[in-house]
Image (cartoon, rainbow, N blue to C red; front, side, top):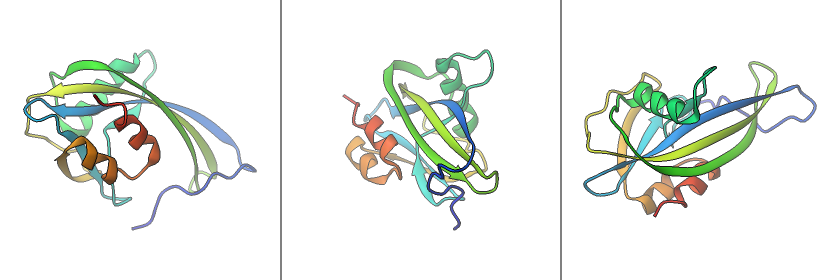
Length: 145
């Protein structure tokens, strides 16, 4: 499947994006929720853009709800922020993205995935480290207790 992003191109314009997301853990065993993004054939954590007037925490909880249908999450702590950059050929624009991640706990096991995802899995934290596609998300998983 084609990738939507490419290496950063310093000769092209750049925009900054702020996002928030979560490492959602299942209360019964501490496993981490992973979502499989169909278009890029990769495992990822739920995250998305912060909307105008929205707090980082509100954005993370909204994105998790929109992407997989989980509600009533229990906030554990902020895990930190990551930043990365990439080029979007279809917009001929570089993106510098900052994502703040929170750790959440849930007792829910039934998910309703957004159409961009074709499946989900619960993985032990060490296994999740090997399955997520990008180093930025691996660094967040490294902060789990």
